[in-house]
Image (cartoon, rainbow, N blue to C red):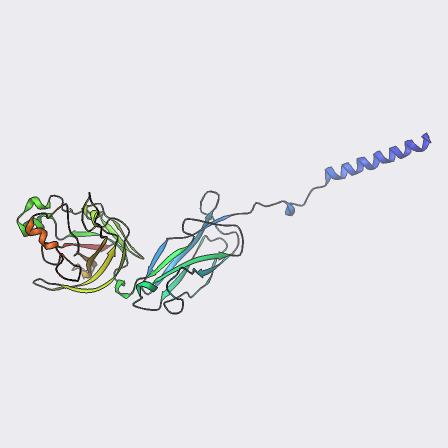
Amino acid sequence: MKKYLLPIMALALTFSFVACGDDKDEKKPESETPVEKINYLYSFEKKSYGVVDETAITFGILNAKDASTINAEEDIHITLTVDPSSTAKEGEDFELPLKEITILKGKHEVEFTIKAKTANPKAEANTIVLKPVFSGDNFVAGQYPTVKVVLVGSFAKNLVGTWVMNELVTDREYMASMWGIEDDYVNFPEFNAEDQMTFDATLVPDFKSGLKNFFIGEATYENAGSYTLQGITPTQLQVLKLTGVNRNFSASSQSENNVAYIGVRNIDDGNGNDLLDVYLLDFVPTDFAQTAVMYQCYEPYDESGYCATMSGSYVNFTMKKAQ
């Protein structure tokens, strides 16, 4: 029995070593090595856009690990969908020529166009919210995962864009000379070349001067018709209704009513350059113009809502298009 047992044990050990040797030498092909999945952070370039006729919108990706720039390893196909929160109707108020967009391999962004189909959109039907849909699951929402598009109407054709301060026409000296009360304008805004504002889906001000006491932050704007400012030469203005301003024109107090009207028009600076001529027509200042005779200029006298419609009461400045 013993003489059969030894050969069997030896044979078992032989098979055992062979099997162990096979396990040690066996290597998985490199193609079977797990590859870490790349996660992309996706975002529209801006949170909102204003559209007059048509506007190009940018959509892109970043590395989800650290928000660094990353190029697509393969074509990324995105479907653009109109969110139910939109008030504008596709095909009636706007057109989305491309609903399927692609970030090409080696690229990190794509641009597409949205077009307005009406020149005078209704305020209650002028908003579009777009969101992207992906086929994969390795996409993480970034800063602006959806985009709001506002149809602003043809009245804003020469308005949309960023404007930088050119001249404060009605400066402190002008206002004081109109009324002969210099002390009344100690707190009146002064010229600051860094002042600017951007008209897009909303009005976004960036004022360093005392004008920031009126333009206190992002505001909505809409067409409020036209108005002729009387004077030696009547001035025809496009009136905008702003929501989100301080009618007190104050650094220390906020008006209960945050709606006011301003007038704008495009003029030539004499050298072929386009300027935006701005008139603040509707405010009740609390930090300047406090004498009885002056203060009466800011008392509403009709249903228009405009108060400062005579020389020496409105604030007038011009702005040039940002380079």
